[in-house]
Image 1 (cartoon, rainbow, N blue to C red):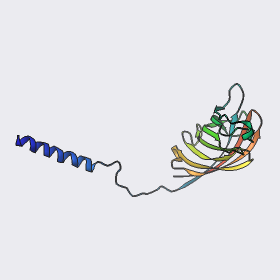
Image 2 (cartoon, rainbow, N blue to C red):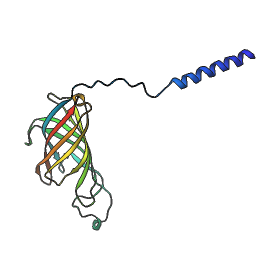
Image 3 (spheres, helix red, strand yellow):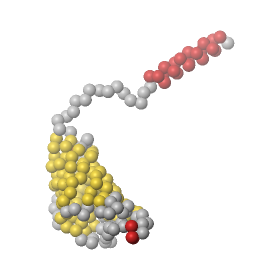
Image 4 (cartoon, one colour):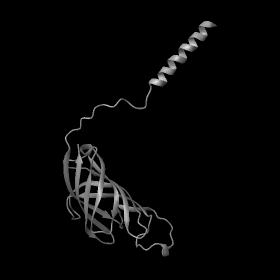
Length: 185
């Protein structure tokens, strides 16, 4: 009987040591960053709004009475997008990637959008890499700036900004010129 109690005490002590020594993190290691790189990207974002094969579609829209909404595009409308990125503004320009993400119209009296979009490059020097943009986007302004908040592949830990300029807009197509400054390691 005494041996059983001794064994139980030994097990309790051993198990308590395991719990004390187990952590959800490890000790911090010295940080030795690689040299910072700055990459400038230039491409065109091609969006097709309404056709047989749209690249942007409405997912949801809030039911707001029209007298509370002064915008031609309803507040709180959510869109999903999968738009091609091309070298030039022409329809037949070479595709270098795609932009996938979500945009929600977030301005009650304006057409401001909040966008989360991942810009993946599928060809060229940056094939397999992407940048992520999560930012307020005043879509009715011809020129605007949005924030680069991350990336993957060659753009790990990216920050930076993108200057957007409306190149062409009609009822079915939107072409936006992107000049992006990416700071990464």
